[in-house]
Image (cartoon, rainbow over all chains, first blue to last red; front, side, top):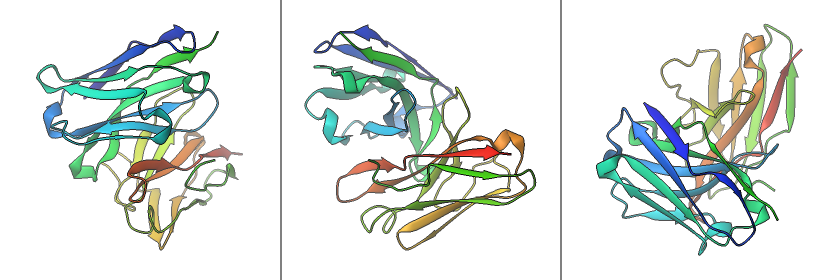
Length: 119
Length: 110
């Protein structure tokens, strides 16, 4: 199983960015997935999660109304649309699978993509 | 400030047994499984313990997890230099409908 994130970069406050996560070696439609971020030198923070069929979506309070998670099971892809970005959104963003066999633990992780929000 | 509380640091000498605690509340640890992740320097986190006390295949049995009430613990026996990493606990929080993490514990092998 391999997860590869892309789409990170440097942008100014108020800007937008779309992160992508390509998954191989796993049938994505069967599994929930999440985005987890880690600010430089700090701990892990769960950002958003989506069920296997996309019918259930969750967000942490700090990104509600600004971030949108989505998935394309036909292409084994996960996305995170990030709008109205703030300096505090600066972090490495990881995508992770959540297989029910592991009680929805974050069992496979990508290598992460860096998002830097700075003027 | 993290919802789950972990000590910021822990240490031990090779061969020792070290325990890392994780404290939460009735809406997270008290009513759901606890998960533990290991993050080696410069790498993505790795699942270490699921369902509070189960190890995925490939994780050595030196690593064990337990849960009691609103607290959980990760024990590492026969400490090795390669265990030097950051360790995070996590659980689903029913009240907020979010996943919550501990602040992480940096383990140093002396």
